[in-house]
Image 1 (cartoon, rainbow, N blue to C red):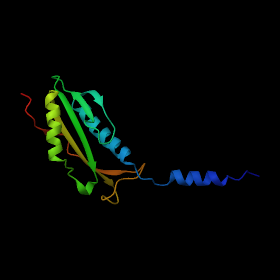
Image 2 (image 1 turned 90 degrees about the vertical axis):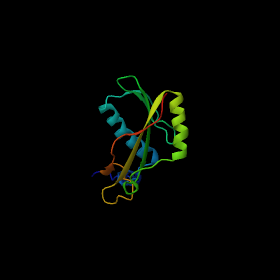
Image 3 (image 1 turned 45 degrees about the horizontal axis):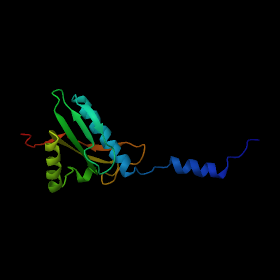
Image 4 (image 1 turned 30 degrees about the horizontal axis):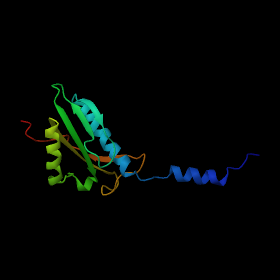
Length: 142
């Protein structure tokens, strides 16, 4: 006769196999992975990567001409796309970039569930994505 499966094991399996919501940090990491792959395809070289929430920039990179870029990544649900940024805060950040002889790129992503674009996807499920690439936020480097 087989040994019965302990009750705690059944609870553990059911708990961890159910659909769990992605945390804000996991969603941020997903958005950063998407943008990072885009930057790689465009030939950027990474100098620094910061995956902490609300710490900017997420990427510091250079192009083939050694121009430095600060890349900001923000996400929201698909229904709230396009993702916007605080204009006043962005001017402060642009000044920081200018002092560092860097240009600023902004990546806004909409991420949502396939069956409900007003919600974020659950762990290990397909998702909707709205991403139109990097937006150059012009600053004068002179």
